[in-house]
Length: 360
Ligand SMILES: [Zn+2]
Ligand SMILES: [Zn+2]
Image 1 (cartoon, rainbow, N blue to C red):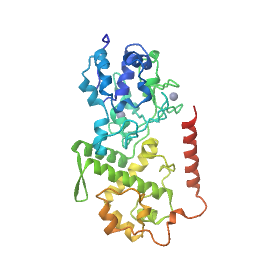
Image 2 (spheres, rainbow, N blue to C red; image 1 turned 180 degrees about the horizontal axis):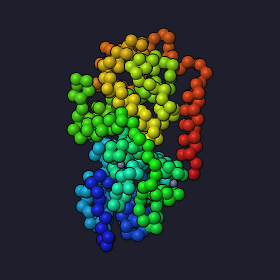
Image 3 (tube, protein in one colour; image 1 turned 30 degrees about the horizontal axis):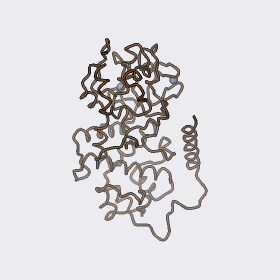
Image 4 (cartoon, rainbow, N blue to C red; image 1 turned 135 degrees about the vertical axis):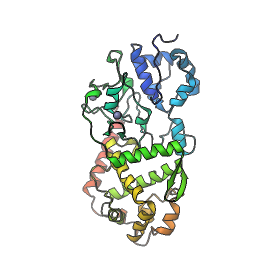
């Protein structure tokens, strides 16, 4: 039977947001609502923002009165297949999509919001873009997004709210109303990167130096650069770090990640610091950056995992411009020096993360 209270799906709204909002509007818990639409299907144990399988759309169309095509358009799958350049498997992590770290119905992260946007909404809702890993700030309000409750540090889990909560701009654990929390200014370089990435997706191509490349190749280049930053920040006394410093790029900033967690699992502050650094690299230009690598005798193995081939547009720079191949000096990075404080902190953070995931 169709709902008596219709809940429109907004053009930039995430599917999980709409489902949770629709439940509260009908006066029931999100879990109860989805249990009634799809008996026996545990929708919240998956990442529903990616998309609703075709076979599951019918009952939702019946109750909501919203055409199936609107749900298909709201799904993130299309954007992420454009980024990857190929179809994506449901049971794998998707590059550049924040990972929910789902264990049963509990999430460990993966959702962000701008509290000022929520304040302005007539009915607060979460945007699709807030799931994208390169989104770290709100361009309308110039603030860093929040990816956890500022009071109790719980992840953002609107599906765990209950009927009495009425709206989704609040913490499912401590009930803090997120429309009244303090905001942090955003790095303008990180915001520039975010907007550039959005434009590249919209146009489906990009220009790098004097080359036109596809959107998917552009994202691959930036994933490569993220790897370079991580390697440099892990080895602050390496040739790679000196080369970047010679270009005015600091890789010893406090906020750069010390864990080995993938970009899609990092907190917003660390992603923002990394995107700030990438934007500076893009401003300098890759040709100039690779020349600096060459001058500083940076080895190719210091830049990337040799088991994975670098993006096509990077390959000529690896051969001509610069990095020399591994020499008899061996890999400097695997030396038996005592571990730096940073390396110990990284190991500790990884251990904590693992304990959190393994705990029931
Ligand atoms: Zn905002
Ligand atoms: Zn809270």
